[in-house]
Length: 203
Image 1: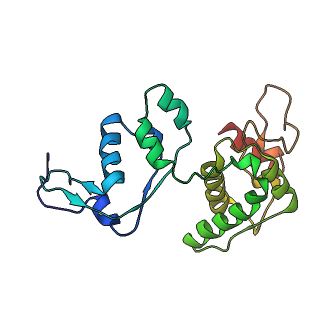
Image 2: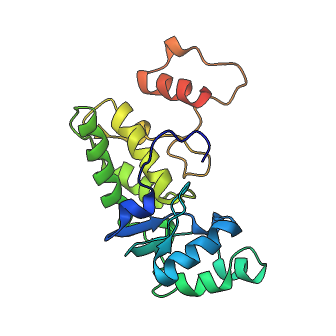
């Protein structure tokens, strides 16, 4: 194959005897779907650039946020592959439908990102936790992870207050607008937190 100068193990070979996780399976091109079907049916595959047929023993887990039944109906996803993958289905509801998971997830990711920076993880104030739990989280866990990374890096103190939270247009408002006039505020006349919020809002 183009540019190959040495042999290397592919992902299927590396996963032999273990778990093979396929994310966003609904985006897989049709020609790859056929090859995956063959792998699922008898464990056979041919390495890229190779001619020898090999076999692998795999536990396959696939994830998607698309409606695969609809994709099958419209011819974008193979029906036989869908049946193969659909042996055991786990539906994970969006984050807004399992709000009890928000605080534990945030706490865990805050700890992870703070430790990676050599910092002590900040804790959430009750008011901040309430705001975060009531937020819509349209980006689900990926959005929550980004929020935790932001807070672990930029929270100025040991406790995260509402002023420290990233401002998002579709989140519940935590305060009244700082100014109602069109003229830009004189930051030197504002308290620190209000000036910080004005700068962040402008950014």
